[in-house]
View 1 (tube, helix red, strand yellow):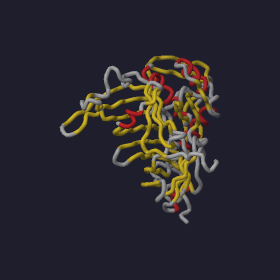
View 2 (view 1 turned 180 degrees about the vertical axis):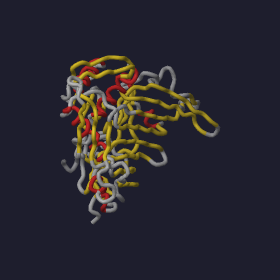
View 3 (view 1 turned 90 degrees about the horizontal axis):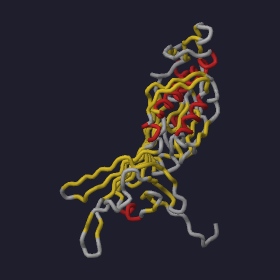
View 4 (view 1 turned 90 degrees about the vertical axis):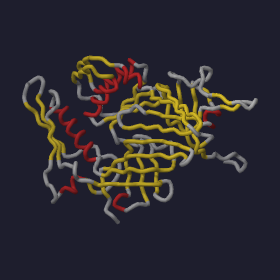
Length: 361
């Protein structure tokens, strides 16, 4: 960068686009916003503005009228951070509007929005996907809604028949992917489906006393197991099958696992699940490993608040430091809330998980 190049500046106040248009007046009248996302996709937004405009003749009127773009069905995007390179944290459609008014305060107009998985949530049907892999099912449903599927490794097997019974497309995909420890998120028109915690969506260092403002971290053995067993029967031979997993996808971090913590406390604790439909032994093994990894990653759970940062998203790996050394580690974010109000500014709340507990020193 040359000496005279303008430097980027950080804005705590988000900027908003409605219908593809920048609306500086809306951003200036912003009272608050809250965007929440979690595993399973479908982020939601609540954005409140002061619904009053002052005119040159000294009169005042409502800002949200029939002539304004603030209406049901409008597309909406929210950006945060660097004014020269803002980060998009929401892209969706307005699905609800509301107004609040009371004595001693300006009226407030609120936009309620959901990302474009809204269409999948509202499409309910019964359908059988025969001789298809989980990845094939994702591609079929994405194509039905004009989305581009981006699918990570590990979902091209097993091949089976999958029944969607009076479920929305979103609920069916969530149920299917949970079995194989995978998640879906929508980015623009791309439906991204990847194994949970297999790789970082972004890596964000957070140090207490600096960008990490508040934190609570808990390591709990209550839900940890030494092994996971899946019981079912083979659909062709009719023979009973049992798959055993003592390892799974652990995600980021280093240290001792919950399984190791059980040693001498509750040796040999196992999870047994027998509610699955017929499947091959290979499929049962994948399901058992997925169930084991899902439990293992919940061993250490962090709930915190950071300075507002649009890089913190579901699937980000958060490197926590400046706290007790038992808990200094890398965590996978599973819930994220970006929020702004005039009193506290822009903050990011998160819930993150780690399969490991540090050595303590």
